[in-house]
Every structure is written in C-alpha cells, then in structure tokens.
Image 1: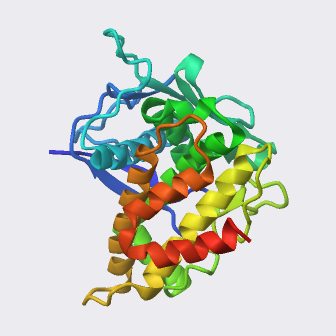
Image 2 (image 1 turned 135 degrees about the vertical axis):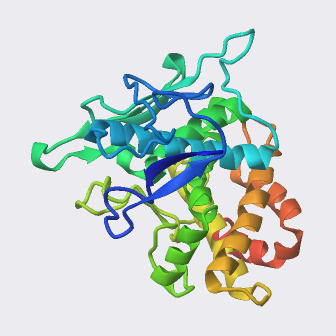
Length: 321
C-alpha cells in the first residue's frame, strides 16, 4: 500500500492548476525523508492513515511535503529510465548520506551544492508577497537534475562552456520530462495549446515568475529560435540552443506522427515518452568531457533513426546557418 502526498502541479505562479494528490508505492519516513533525500530541518509525521494529508500541517510543513513529493516523482522517472536506483556521487564506501533539501533560507538562490550534499530552494520578498523556490516545480526538477547529472555524467561539468551547457540542458529537460510523464499534465498541455506546441505553454516556459522583467516573466523558453555560435562563454547559451533544438524535434514528431485511435492528450503522452527516452539515451552515450553540440547531435541521430530528416532539417536551421 502506498503513501499519499499533496504536491503542486506546476507551482505558485500557476494558481489555476493548483495542487493534486499523488501516491508513492513505497514507505516514506518522517521528515519527509528516505535513504535518498531528506527535507532538512523538518520532522513532519504522517497522519493517522499513514499519509501526509493532515489538514493541521503548517504552511511550512505543507511546503516540505510538496517539495519531497516532487523530488520523488523526478527520481522515480529517472530510475525507470535507468532501470536501477540512483546513488549520489558521495554514496560510496558505505557512506549512505542522503541528499539534503533546504527550503527555508531567506535568500534568492536555487542551487545544487555538491560539497554540502544539498539543494537550496530559498525564498525572497517583498514580505507581503514571498516567492518560494520550493513552490516552483521546474526549479525543483532542474536542481535535482544537477544532482542526478553529478551522479551519472559528472564529466560534463568539468569541460568547456559547451559541454557544461549540455549539462544545463539535461537539467532543464528534467522539468520537461516530468510534465510529459504525467497524463493529467499532458491533458492540460493540450487544453492550453489545442495541440499546437508553438504557443507558449507550461512545457516550453521555464521558471515562470522568476524572470527579471516582470512578475510572470520566465527565465528561459524552449520555444526559441536561438542559433548556434561557437566560442560563446556562457553554458546557458548552449543549453538554450540545445533545448530549443530538442523542442523543435518534439513539435515535428507531434505534428507528423502516426494517427492511432487515442485522445490528443494520450498522443502527447505517448510521443513524450518516446522523445524523453531517446534523449536520455543520447545523454547517457556522451563520454567525452569536452563534448560539443555537434557530438550530441551525431548521437541523437543514432537514437532517432526514424526522425533523421526532421533532425537534419532542424540542425541546418540552428547549427549550420
């Protein structure tokens, strides 16, 4: 029997989506915590039914529960792709210390700190209208993506700005993968776009509410036309190019994919599963700590053999013009 928790569907800047109850098919310790993650500074106990749904939890405790549930959904997604459990880079030689999650530092940061074995999800003012990083699902997924990347592909963080940009793309994609892994979110995605993912939507926009040019401005947008330029200094630039290219590919596959008897939301979910699995396998094929976007795309073509023409078309537009 599983454990039920309430989590944000996408975060505080999507009030129309609100929250939902998820069920994890395993036990959860007080905290909430387990052998992989622990919400630091909390000791939230399950209710009398063994779930984390008690209406008497404080606002802070509700945030701790939702953050834990979101983290678990991302970890479970990657463990399903890997077909084995994730172990953090420091979990060796009998050291089993979990990844700590800090959600109540009064600062603006959202970051993975390997030396402290933690993720920080801070909050900041103005006092009347706090912004909580732990209430934004894609920020949680992105920072957890850094911890997973450190476990699986640490060499990407030790190379050039371009290889580090590929690593940043891995982390933004963690947030996108999470949306596509949930049928209810795929249904919302269709309702929001009517199947045209070229319209701005929850899948394309990253960090809504955390941007620099207005309350609901995003940090990044996968639905972009940024073209590749060599010798840029910023990993985020290369990340933006790569995520945009991969988003182009998803749009192309959805537009031209086979027409099975299924709902539109089911089609997005099915193709999303195919897309994320092939992209993940491309990342797992990267072995060089100085891998560049052309290396990545060469591996991508091997994974998407049925989509070669679509990928080459997008490569010509982004990489070689």
